[in-house]
Image 1 (cartoon, rainbow, N blue to C red):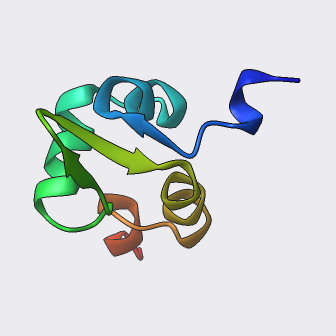
Image 2 (image 1 turned 180 degrees about the vertical axis):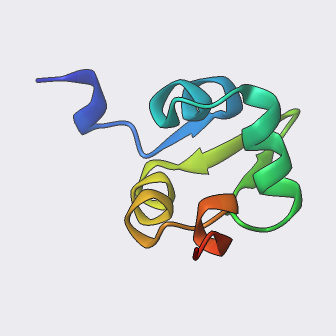
Length: 67
């Protein structure tokens, strides 16, 4: 069994790695409510499904580029 098959949510650093972005950029997306997350204790987690939706829907800065 692969590790990713059971992981439902990841931290900011792992989300950034999976998206190919910096952790700071992912944190900004979370603050702008462009990427859903949940606070659990001191950690902020992001559902893996939300990362997939984010990429499929083209949310964020690239969405506004229509030139």
